View: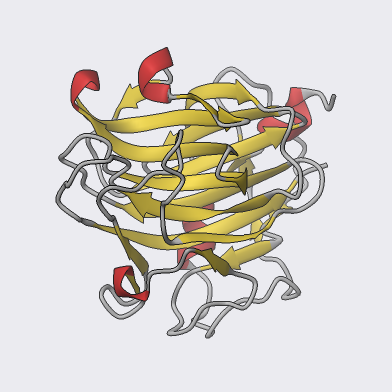
Length: 255
């Protein structure tokens, strides 16, 4: 097991990565990575000064998808580049979820994850007001095996927040239920998942520099891992469909 220090001590200034790049149609994974200076959480000692880079970055400034991406159960009527230019907008859908027995959620946008340990980050503007509306960052094998950090609404959790959930062989451990939920009414928000072996930590941030941990989960069965984003009402009832505007996505390959 890789020691947590080299993996999770790298806290990323993602705001720079998401806003300072030129405006290409897309940035392919082979493009020269752009340095992101590392920072630390208050409880950790400073990392080495070696800069960390996005091995893949998409600022969603194009009008077509980077070919590294692929959809699971695409619904073209519920995603757009033109609705909010400079963002990928995914609109939530009712009566859908990848949790439990439904496994019918559309518009999961995914790409292959790097081998070994990594971090994935996204910035999303999303204002949920109804139970379980969520915009999410995913580490995904299939509908029965994944880890998810979500900007979501939960009435029993006192409104809007961020949660970390996991599903292992179809059995869900929801952040709402086990306390891995942090009240957070603001939008937009940066979301991050860090992988260290079989451990996955979820974080959120207002600026992409200073991070707060929302929880940690273990998943020992993930293989052929993909990473990406999605938005859903995550319920078997009709709920107002609302947009999630993803402004950037960054993958960090870790030692």
